[in-house]
Image 1: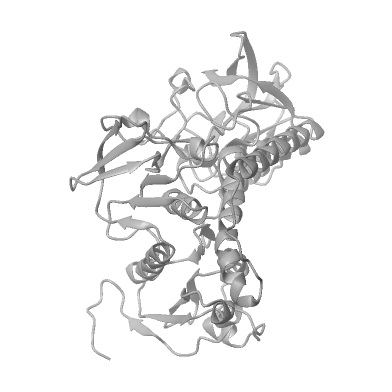
Image 2 (image 1 turned 180 degrees about the horizontal axis):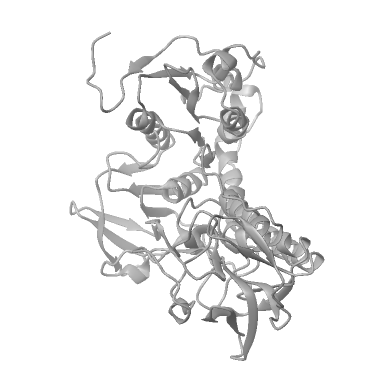
Length: 497
């Protein structure tokens, strides 16, 4: 018995005989979203196949690996390097806590790199076992769409395997984008940055997003000289402006050279093997490595989607409805390839809801409200809900902003000059907390808990009535009593109150 999705999102049981299909579901791409969707669909009784490129830490058109970007060349290895980079500052701070660190502390990049590689290889194996334990058939090779119900898997030796499926799910994620300037081939992307054989003494990073900021923090924390070039006045466009400024101050305070309103115009190899990066201000930056962290693009070019008539948007992302279905009823898509909200936990959510909708008889729309996320700079930034700017833009009434800036207790002894900053954005009329943000140690751990409160519709009064954990930074979120500012909505003229 099959399940057919109706236009209104309801699932209808039919008596159509689907035995002539090789699979109930075939998934192209075994990253976070694809693995989750395939496992859950199999658990609901579906016969599932999935294909993924052979494993390699650095992706290309012919290699990838089960686990996808997040596990192999994204979140997981990045966080390992963030941990490694954080120890430099911790060791310095330890001196004022009585630890006698008398000699210069050396850092072994190759050792950390090997530990990182060991971990992603381990996780790759775990993901394969998860698929096998769920009864999902894994094929190693490049997947392509042949028609609305047919896929082709091209193996590394060129062998082509064809399979039919009642449903096809595209979960191929995204790829790093390279800007087009002379000498662009001399630059690397985040893929290569996580697997450099030699640690760079001087790095130039182009970009103002979270990947750029994170790698600037990592390399600087490990001892490199870092120049960060970005187009805007502040990095992290789209985040809360006040928090962006705090992150910029912290980057500078830890020794990153910021170049706002700056682009690179060309890269050239020098006689001694380094790279000369020329800015649009005529400045030459000499580096061992130039990282392009200039965004990512949906990975759709080689899928042969035109064979089935699947529609793409201007960015090359697969267009889907609120249930993750394309314009072709049998073809679906989840994760970064749809360019909705490009976060690993969101891809997991979309994969879960896809399986519920198609194979569990429970149509489910992914909910993108109050999704928390973090920038793992050192120290990190984490947010949930609306930024102050978004709240003002969307509000019908006044917005109350509560802020707290303080020196973390740890810094009072270590002597580190680095403030923690927290913010709550509140609807003045309803008292509902619309957004929370924090820059400081443990920000992602703290904001994850705050996200539960926002998801439950918590009010500022409920925050105020919550007893804090003392002494902790987190307690500041329940002790901010005084309004920092009251702001009218964007469509209402400001008045002096």
